[in-house]
Length: 396
Image (cartoon, rainbow, N blue to C red):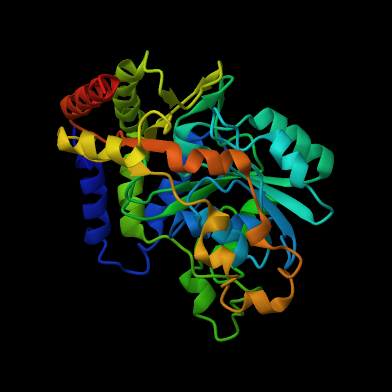
């Protein structure tokens, strides 16, 4: 199977045939948004340039103000907390569960303060945290919940589609994700009010756009009296060429997700019975979409680097490490926030004092195996190499 197929190519050609005339601009984005909203059983979808912009706009739409606190996990790509900084808010890090690797309601509860206004959950590697518990906590404390599902397409929790729990959910079309347009992102919500804000804030604050209308018209701009900008906005709108590819990918979502689930199954078959490898635990009722297949390595028995090197020596494609915890990155350690550190809103929060014990335990022990093999025989081959590597260390 090809990752980019005939659908995507046909839609790209359709955009090119339109010659980028103003009358054709944004039509493909509109089609993508409608298709995505239908696929994800929600009223609104708003496409943007990437999955960091989507999180930023979700926070702005939620009314997050300078100095407000937004709780998020440290074990994920730092774009999650960087988006909080973009909104001039304070990222507050809640620990993750040792077995699921995911943020929990209990860990969120431990860092709640009067300044807390929102929670960003992360469906890490394709598995969603316990959203019912988190939403219950959010309701009791009047908090907005944004699902960061950049790595999670087509997963379910207790029969409900992941992405339909929070007030908004953000997805990425970056090149490594289940669905890709090379780059891009999209936010979904059932709220008309939030959708209005998402679209207007991401579209330069134009007066003529709203939850159902993504562009201003010729009639609007051909009057010298037209007042365009009613509020500050960002230029985060997705281009039609990216939307063309993303539309084709969304229409093929099930097969693109299933190929990764199959690859993960082959890895799991090899890991079963290994006492020093512990896969991400999946609670009954959860369906994992396996952006990657991840295990926690018992590094007291097998060294992380030695395992990775031997896997590659046997012909493996390589193994990705987990990201450094966000608060351990130099930007956070040194408060290098492009002068936002001088606003006074971060003075009472010392990132050098943050310690999420479970996340710190997990980060140097996680092995992330690729699942994006569109030739399933290659996935089987990689799984066989994993088995060979496990056998090698079992004999040491």
